[in-house]
Length: 121
Image (cartoon, rainbow, N blue to C red):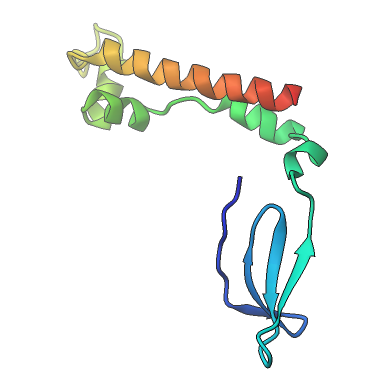
């Protein structure tokens, strides 16, 4: 859901003051008269999620940066911990890696549940 956002531009002789999901407020610069125009109350109902948005959300996975942030480690140490243990550049994973991965997995599950609900409508 989008909130009110203020932009400073003139549209068809009216000052465009902001936009919400249900209405736009336009001000006439000379008289400051508010004009209220109705739009779709709930755009999601009338504009269901498209294929691209749905598949983007489905394939959006945590990156090395996300894992490093959750584990409190550097991206490089995460990359090295993912290497084959026989590699000379291998490093042991951070001590709290299990909790970090669980937290990221739980967040992903929630996002996927929201995707399912959005697709079911």
